[in-house]
Length: 386
Ligand code: V47
Ligand code: SF4
Image (cartoon, rainbow, N blue to C red; front, side):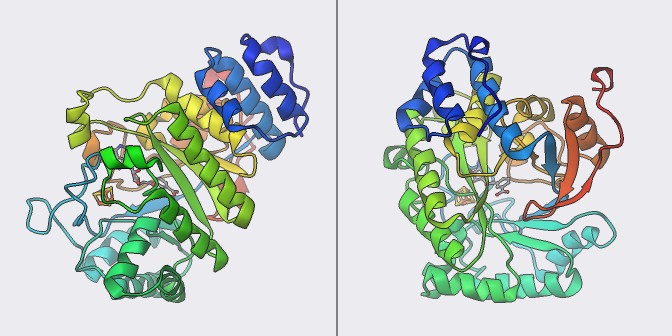
């Protein structure tokens, strides 16, 4: 499957049998993934991931012009998702729920700009039921029909099903009829029950997250998936999480992309409890999670780096570690900026092109299904332009 892998590029002998498997197109085991996570040879792991990515996606790196809309931060799990700094109780200071007019006012910026996708997620708000979202999606499709709606995590779908006393499937059918196109990957955190008990005790469990995505894929609604790392999880927890994602992808093929999410410790209970405030994940761990995702998830076409969490510079470096997609020109991101992200709230097209070209790759704008809309080949990448 890959171009020839040069064994002399690997300084950790434990990586050699893994490299041979990759070259032979054999699937990696959970124990291979743990070896990749533990190897001191980060560059070797990155080299393997880059080879696999280039064989799959060439030197093209995609991005989408999207706009985040977070319509409500009111959430019934406010007290139990201890890693979240975004949610509020209904009467708490800072709580908000947009009216349709407010949603439209935010969305309005997409009218003349290059936004092609709304990424809509929020809290589990008892006052924002199925009708709130179906009305919102119908309005957005009526006013801005060219914009794709990627909305509602598996956790939000399950919440709507619970409060409306409907099945996941029926909620998804109603949302699709109203304009839902695809689903984002949020809410996965780390699937391990022991981890969830510590960071998100009352949240939808891993098996149900998978169940909601399966229901969506069966209806032809494609989705992304994520893994939150850098908190209390172990390497074994990460491997088990990736295995569940790979298994569902084998079954349905419905996942578009995998996005590892770096835990941010500021302004949330967990960060205080762990004494991690001001200390984010390390660059090594960020690159390693992306590279291992690329190597272990052999049935995924796309691995995305979320520059908002790991900085644009780290995301640029990740383009040599198996990543083929950058989270796009996000307008007014709120969720991560509530937990201390110091990155800009949006990146301009020029900034994204510069990052990708600086990594000696070819930038291309894509749609929400990863179809390329336009390539930006014209400027040959020169290191000094980086
Ligand atoms: O599920 C919450 C995470 C996720 C923190 O599908 C935190 O294209 C770090 O999933 N530190 C929502 N992360 C965002 C998300 C996402 C982002 C970009 C693209 C896509 C996509 C999906 O944000 C939540 C949770 O895992 N989150 N709090 C925190 N303190
Ligand atoms: Fe609510 Fe999501 Fe925050 Fe949990 S992570 S408290 S479900 S908004």
